[in-house]
Amino acid sequence: MKKSIYTRIIAATLLFASFTFAQLDQTGNETKSTVDKTDYYYHAHDGIYFATVFTFAYESLSKHYERENWGDEGTDDISFKGWIPPLIEARLGAYYLNVAGIYGTFAFGLGTGDIEDTYRNKEDDYERTEEASATTMRMLLGLGADFYPLQDKESLLYGLFFGLCGGFAFEAAEITSEYHFQNSDETFHNFFGRVEAGYDWWFCTRWRVGASFNYTFGGFMHTESPNNDYSGSRKEEQTTTSHTFGLAIRIAH
Image (tube, rainbow, N blue to C red; front, side, top):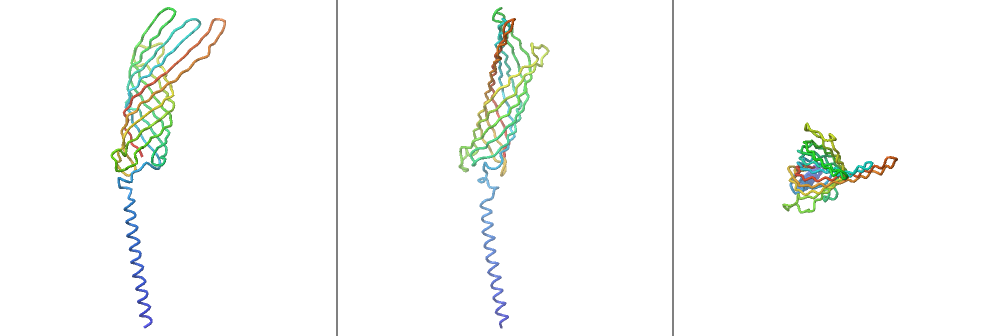
């Protein structure tokens, strides 16, 4: 008799335990489905920031020389205009509060276009202009940030972003035509700032593709101290400016 009672107690306990575990498992499944990150509404800007960017750009480079060389005063205006198809850029950083992505960037690109050099001698009232085809090399090192102002994931504008970046640009143009200038290449190094606006579309949980327009402005000024000696003095001032308009396609994490 006692054995029958014990058997019933054990059976009832096992039945209650199985019912309890079933309810916990069902609750766990509901919780998992609630936070299912394959759902579009759980796409977010968090974790590691990484982006590969391809920018098809039109650039305008210019350099102005002021020379005073032992009584010989003159100016040189050198300009390059051409296309970079494309500028390849890698960005790496992290997101902050789902609002901003802070990153370091490295970019490299080769382009082609035309270069022009106009030399003017102030004393002799002499002017000479030379034109040639050239290739350009551009390398950027900088720090930047992307900002995502809209946090409503049901909004069609949720993927909108704005960007700022600044750093140093190494730029040079090399003559490729048979007719050469006095110099076969020219440098246009500068400090740059970039503004950007674009939109992202998610194609899986963590990755998205985006398109943006950007504008980059660069500038640098250098003055060489006068060198006075028995034969006179030497002085040189150099001002570099850069303008770049780009359409960028990117894949970002």
